[in-house]
Amino acid sequence: MKVPYIAAACVMVVMLLLSGGQVPVAAVTCNASQLSVCANAILLSQAPTKTCCDRLEQQRPCLCTYIKDPSLQRFVSSPNAKKVASTCGVPYPQC
Image 1 (cartoon, rainbow, N blue to C red):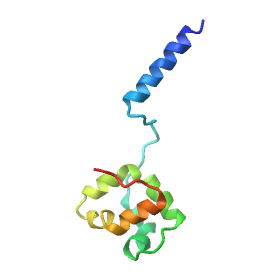
Image 2: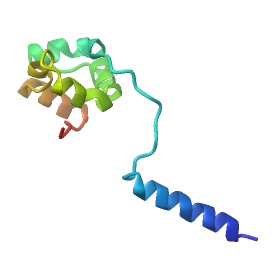
Image 3: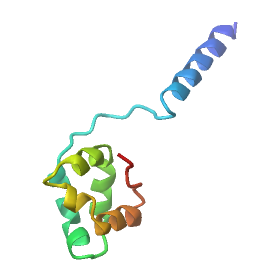
Image 4: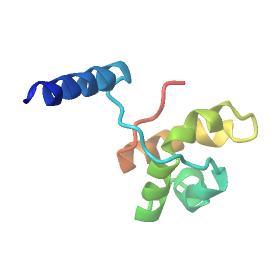
């Protein structure tokens, strides 16, 4: 009988839609120092390295936390930081 499989598939689709279309991923440890590899790109307007882009993507779930942190806000919210995110293909968050 294929009915249980269809029902299970429907439940999974509904759950995916209710979750906003996001698939759960492994938890990320928020650590702003992981973005230190992006310092030259952000502070000196240099092109971001692949390592910078990779770390930015890894830390993406944490960006709003960094933006709200007064000691990090001026770096993470700067025009250069937004440019680095864009160059790396990482959407800048709307917090």
